[in-house]
Image (cartoon, rainbow, N blue to C red; front, side):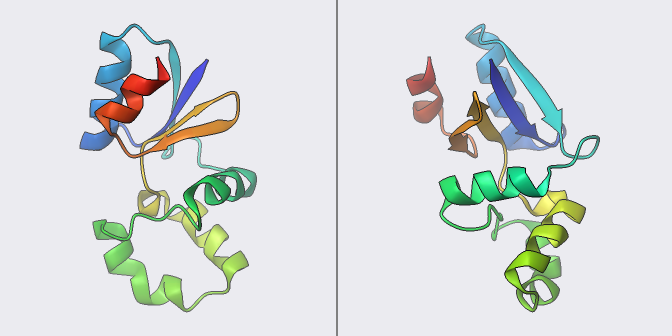
Length: 112
């Protein structure tokens, strides 16, 4: 089964969920605000993302950038867990393997 991690009111997350629903793909939605990611999640996503999975174009990152960038790598993981709006989203997984960050219709077409 697919898993989509994100925030329900995020437009990009809404697009991903709509795509999954329209294509009748079963998924579990994990709301960062209700069930935040673990440090293991961040580490797994970092390996796929090529670094910490932070949306550097997002409002939350821009607001917290100086504080975030001053931290050690380990402290950054904890900071991300506390500030989940910084995470690039949605994150689409299947069986613990990251398939996509963000929503790109072509990438999602390729998962079916």
